[in-house]
Length: 467
RNA sequence: GGUCCUAUCGUCUAGUGGCCCAGGACGUGGCCCUCUCAAGGCUAAAACACGGGUUCGACUCCCGUUAGGACCGCCA
Image (cartoon, rainbow, N blue to C red):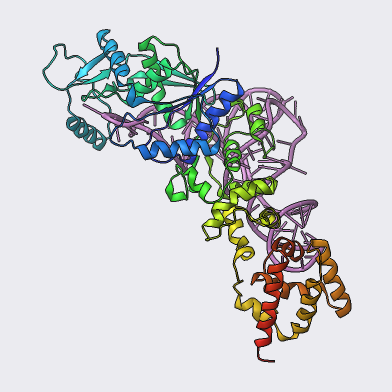
């Protein structure tokens, strides 16, 4: 039997971190076993589902590379199927008409909660024999007994059916409800492994009962532990960005997120870095932990930095373009870009950061940081800069090694240490005191721009009142 | 209130009865390297929630306590 897994988000918002991990584990397991990964949109709540959300989820999946083999299927297009199955159950007496109105139910639930009783449906319509001329919902008749969920992550979990209420499977407006749709879909789509968050554990016995009522074999269940925020409550906006696409906008590489998410709840010895292929080869539920985990943005950033350092400069060039554009820089076609990136990637944890520190390579004129100029662009350096401009102008090759040689000759003649020359030059070229190493930076910048800036700094120093 | 899940450094985790006075990674501190900032190398501090069993021997098995979390809709 071929493995079939599915990811079934409801389109009521963007793809969030937790959903992405669920999708990833489904995808990984399917790939690991040469199975199929199916995407199904659970949009039975017509009021809350939006087209934008569907697109946002698809975008998130595509960005992460979680490609699906079948779908996307939409539950809203399969209402007839659910109705058919629901009425079959009604014919068999496995469900019944419930004439209670939503208002009555809400009132009863609140009263029960207030009295400290379980807010369960009391089953009062279960014994109504005649068919009334009133709107009704269909409720599943939960049989007595015990239901055991065999979960390959959590182990066996037993539930007493008396604690499970007769759930509505078809609303009074004829639309089906979640638990019923899930079962009908997973059954008809031949899903072999239901992999989802462990917030669904309490739904599982209901679904098992529904499977049995439908006469269908059970899938294997795998309930993943939750992802928590720093305060150990369910991850939400309060904890920072939860949208997958927000991480794209922050300049994360998709594989960094994939690697991070995979390691959150799953492990393979002490290994931290995994290629996609390694993930596929090594993934197994035996190595998935049972306890929830706290989402740690710092570690994600570390991984991102790692992958930035490993990505070829040419590839990074393409990825960096939109981030530069945000600063008004159109760098497409700029041949210096790969070299520029090589100088920056050791010190950029995100693409956004990289773009931010690349600005001085592009802007017409550098913006002098007053503190930096006060400390380094001093009149006493005028002579030094004049010699430097002269030597550098004469260079036929503006490369790291040639520049280093030119600098060294000046240092030898003046008896100065590199730091004495490098810092003023750095300020002249970048406006500040922090930058990549000056030789690689100058090579990446190009001779023309470097000389323009050195000359400008020279003028700047000459304007200064002599101390 | 009920049902259910979980419990190793701040965080992610290794550990499947002796290899553990508990290993790795992120983060944090120190040192080295150094033209600044990084990167890199070395190094330090940092954990088996608690109490009972079982066993020659428990981080590992069982039971309880405590603490966290999730769920209890004609939402998904």
